[in-house]
Length: 267
Ligand code: F6R
Image (cartoon, rainbow, N blue to C red; front, side):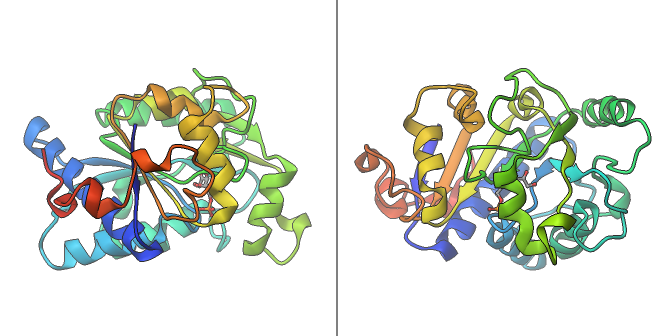
């Protein structure tokens, strides 16, 4: 796990996008095939997506023929609801990055048989050759995807309930708490750990406790993100506020001390 403390929220997006772009280029070189991205919704990765979109527009990153798989979707919201993750991903990822809509996949939260829809989603990921780089945020309670505390470390895509904490946190996107769905389909922790690289972004003091538990805490189902400690290629990009709960922050320093050449993160 490589932890990079950026100098600002703006720099979190820039550094994380540079990392994602480097992984995409390497994946294309290595496999001779377009990259497969895993994409998160929520506020945390928005800057990252903006920076990626700028690289695509400038011709620095080729995502023609790339495909993408969303982490999760609400159960019970119609696909056309503005807060369904199908719509959020279309607005924040598919359009700005110029991806072909038929290569962008979101779990089907309207499926009559959620278990069958979950199995089918896993199969689609497998058929695409697996995910090259999974972009993640982290919940204030340590969830990744919607794998809430207590989730099985080997879980695959499935239907899950949302905790009251998560529903409260996501209430800002709806008119009232009652409108926030109670269930979701989410990639499992096992699915996320299968991605060849992980890039997790977090900003603000509201994430400080979860980030500390993920990076320095015991690996525990109480903080599902702590499982990432076992991933071979995980990069955590956070601002100083999100880093403020770390006891050993001196190991991570500022991004420029740490990795002066981060803009050319290819390997
Ligand atoms: C989103 C997702 C969640 C969010 C997390 C943080 O698809 O799976 O794990 O990444 O809840 O959300 P924000 O970024 O809005 O604080």
